[in-house]
Length: 152
Image 1 (cartoon, rainbow, N blue to C red):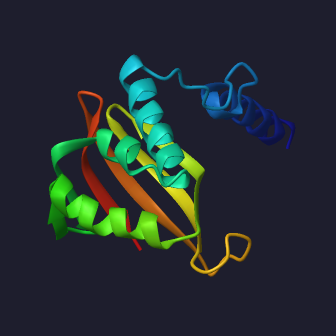
Image 2: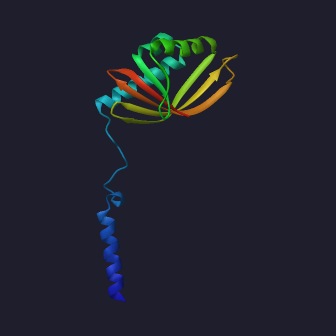
Image 3: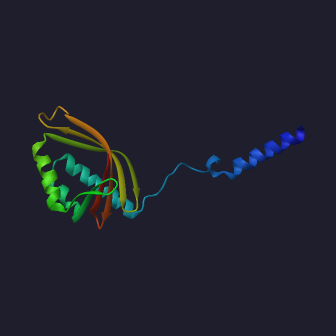
């Protein structure tokens, strides 16, 4: 019996020491962002700020001329800034308030994936008429958003 207990204790200590997830020296993921990831995240932060301010010029300046918008998985919504202006320019003019917030973010290389909340006021800037949450993926190339994918 002592032999079995000894084997169990030895085996348990080996498993615990062999598993880095159980070691106190291992910290939770404290990944260091690369320069590319910091730039990509900064572009999306600036986009959210321009959106919230309903600043169409600042908003447009963050997109590539041939930006592509998709609905997941690969349904093309539109291509280019002209279509972007048609869609968002009108919305910026018609709404009384827009507020987008990044609730959670994953950044990997030049890709930013945000879980975002959106609040829209149509009639009164103090009354939220529409609230939604969705996931958006942004591909950033050369400091410009080249591709957007909405997951709804």
